[in-house]
Image 1 (cartoon, rainbow, N blue to C red):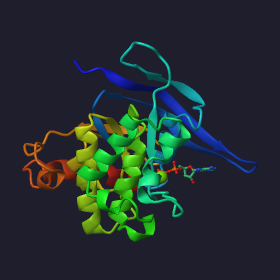
Image 2: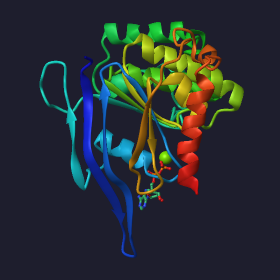
Image 3: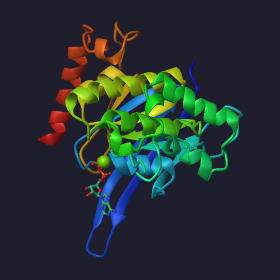
Image 4: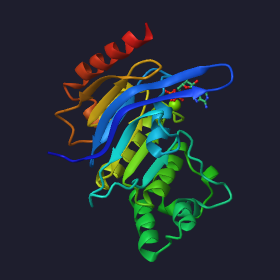
Length: 257
Ligand code: ADP
Ligand code: MG
């Protein structure tokens, strides 16, 4: 029985301003197991980014609890890596200097850690660009560099908020496959928000479908593809793929009515 890293219980959240209250999340409960790759899909504006901010500890839930189970049995907040739609690389630093930025800030620039960053750069075709500026890289390479910067700090949980949505379709397919490969190979637990249903099915072990705002968990769909040992691109050809797609499509179409 896999152990869960994270458990959300009845999480609710509303935004408040002088004019109005905007309920964003309503009694959200789910868990994520250690090493699992979970995708969240839901209508635009339903509360997905709000949910990630709560998991990251940037917002406090109004109601409900989040429980983290650390491997050593302690209950401290785990190290979280956060990756956004934009890469947020700094142009005044080289690609390598960007990749080690988190290590630098956290006083973790050990030979071991820098070697890990360099090995990731070698594995994912960034090594020969390491002394160039971010603007000299393609969009896909920038996202890979941003992921390496995130992984350098060895987070226990990766939160990915639509990290591919600024990329064109072709790049998106290859970069999402690469990034999925990096995450799986490193054995990380990951939570990906995406509005691309095919992406969710081809990358994730489980898809959580949220309702329109205020978001509730509408359905959870475990994904088992017979071609899952292959790349996410190949997984799109699995015979089960279309059935999963239709299930997700119907669940989301209900929400748009
Ligand atoms: P999603 O990521 O699913 O598109 P968000 O979590 O960003 O949705 O936002 C959920 C809802 O909360 C939206 O209706 C949005 O307008 C509202 N919202 C988001 N941030 C704020 C804020 N800082 N103040 C008020 N309302 C907000
Ligand atoms: Mg969002």
